[in-house]
Length: 510
Image 1 (tube, rainbow, N blue to C red):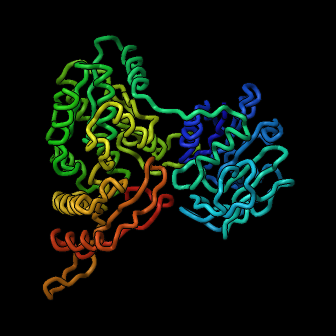
Image 2 (tube, rainbow, N blue to C red; image 1 turned 90 degrees about the horizontal axis):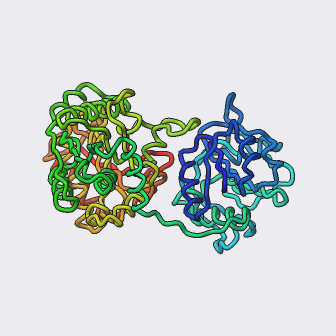
Image 3 (cartoon, one colour; image 1 turned 30 degrees about the vertical axis):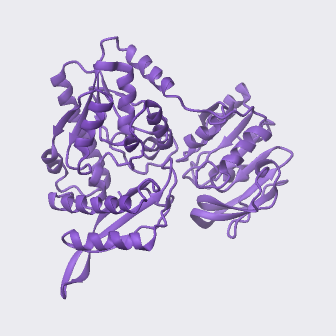
């Protein structure tokens, strides 16, 4: 067992997932009562997560310094390393801010970096503070051009600290570092874990059976990977007691309603209910410009519609959603975490609901959801489908969502997908879409002045959504997309390409 002390990191659960992938049990605990719990259960190792606070802030989360005298290996990550340094006599100050990729040079290949041959690695940073003075008996084992104490160790006490995030996929050899900690340092037996859809189906059966053998469920399906996989799992668990519902609200991609019918009727042998409600959503969003209010407005209306459907169908006990863990953590999933944005299916839900939520993929990441879909035998076109946000085009239109701007966004978005597919990039990238920015710029069309809207392009690589790097598309592909959007979408003046990584940016603009 390895304990993970949560200081509010967006990737705390991801640390746990990486360790569990080695078939090593983990438990995430809050920092306030960590010492007592660790003394009682004596885990083989402790990981201190990152977090949004600064260690010198009033009320910043901390741990009892006695934790470092328990003779248990400790790995501090980002904030976890900073709090370690501060409590053991080091010094932390505001310093060089780093968000995204940077190069780290390894000085020692023992312990944390053993079996890593490269002298230099690309790692993912997300910090505004730095350790400027090491605690006694600590030594530097890796550094960057701007962070001389990027990785450190106290060899005798087996305490390690890294300023970067080894748990994210964009850190080279990050999984090897965590494996070295679990294996060589904590002496856990390592076996590679695989997710099994039968286990998830069994968990759903246990939940629904508590309501009785006659309980029923409806599902909020969007045509995307998450909701389709979640629905397929529940369909396996509940059979004819399950009904999928698709809100044809105009915010999804063109043709999604037909795709939903095809997948559910032909593959899952379940007839979905299609609700035409575009006018209701446009009316609800009229005058709404704040991104959080958009998400909450959409979430509330979704629930209202599903409750109306449930009343028509008779007694319904559960609402199935395709929530995954990245949705949860961005909506402030833990005590010390920052709220990045409300997801319509998490932070955007009303406080009082008449239906119980059933979310079979809530603790899964996107790559795990795709694997569950493969095991269920879903079509490759569904499994490989690029993710699409629940609030849909509403959060890709900066400012008010009007029918006119929605039509323009649909046109631009369709062009992006068409070109990406034509050029063979669709399955090479994680997500690709356009954004109506709400910014007007001057253009010249047909020798005349046009003052039109600026369209943004967001195309990036990721697997679990926790980190992302912008896709280095060939210039010719970008040119093709830009030319088509400016020529074919009315009222557009120019196109720009977003080359911001996550962090600091989120995937969506809103």
